[in-house]
Length: 251
Image (tube, rainbow, N blue to C red; front, side):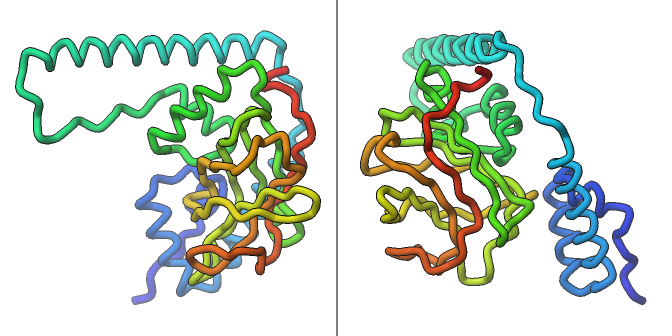
């Protein structure tokens, strides 16, 4: 008997609101169902149009201060918890297995607002906190090109520093045998950087370490490249953004 279609889930799938196991089931179904693939593409197109149709609204000036106050409070609370845990374990034998660090709710919120993956590694969470707490922090928009018109992203960084956080959304999964590679361009010359794959909704959150301060580069771009990366771009540019002086978050 033919497996039933998944039309009733495709709108939620296009909006990225399903659970991972539901996404896996739908994507397995789409591999063998031309009807649902067509419907899924239509749903993605409508979702993209809705995104671009929404007017841009400037956030209130106090938003950045409130966000940073919340971040500082979370950092302080985390330090107090760590101190308490160290005090408690000093009287007990250290366990062979360490408990995993809890996911930070502020980091989850920031990744959601900025367009990145809903779950990040501790390095990402820590760096996002650190960057956004810096008065010089900037958020640079990264637009999808004609090769990925529904995609976009943000680069969060501080001009004088040599690391940043890249967040993407709307990218299709990289072709088989390939992954996405980040490039920083200066004087038209691209320097290879981090490699990444995307998850649900084409989302990814990736720390990028840069050879020189961020302010010395003019453009950030993303291309699909063979697994393991390339010394120079070989695939089409799917995301690109200029690194002109950016406004501080919430400004």
